[in-house]
Image 1 (cartoon, rainbow, N blue to C red):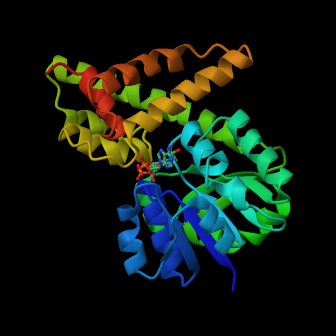
Image 2: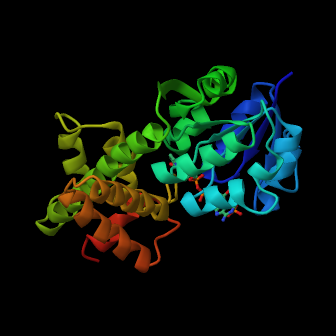
Length: 288
Ligand code: NAP
């Protein structure tokens, strides 16, 4: 039986491992804050003390941590993934990072004889709970094939791109669109309120037209009720906007609306909304 590892038991990691365990897979978990593994251990997961221990115990290991710095720390740091990597084993980084980070991880893992796949996900907490994520994979094709079972349990669809870095890039393109959609949506709701319209009326009219979408449907009523429990933490959205802007700069692509939206997410971070849902950007847009 293939043994799977999972590093990073945050909002997404917890939901994804829960589905792997429910499907009967053998999973060993690790998290920087070990207590967060307890509910998964209660469901049957093994818990390791370091990422290196997970790699030693498993054939294929997934990493799902915050940002490029965290992805590097877990993979390249002391007692990290690379330290225990050997020929034939696989490491799949599903965190949202920039393509340079992904390439650096790939090079190190391959240097140890291991196989590397980047596979950032499209979808949030609810799709993770429902096993309905979309994986944007690039890298080792044999690892992509060998990981078909867990990818199929955690997700509804997987894409494979031949060149390492392309998964990371498409993820940033998608998220910068999402981030700017959210600030435009918030501005619309805020202006509506300023002129005396009801948010519920705006949402109802919007739902009938061409700009209706699942994100507005899901977040709109919560925003109207000032509820910002994190599904996708705002600090991660700002990180993705920053990484998209860096990619744009590298390729001489102006990203005017992304840059303007990023300023609002920065302001929201400064106002203490890091760990709220990214829709809490509304708070720095509306008059209170
Ligand atoms: P989260 O709940 O904030 O969890 C972050 C995880 O990263 C935690 O396990 C945390 O460990 C770990 N971590 C942070 N810094 C670390 C470090 N230096 N060393 C080791 N571990 C570290 O985040 P999430 O929502 O699950 O998101 C995880 C990744 O998926 C991010 O890249 C995010 O952009 C991406 N993503 C999120 C969503 C979403 O809707 N939430 C959707 C798609 C993609 P501790 O518990 O010790 O803090």
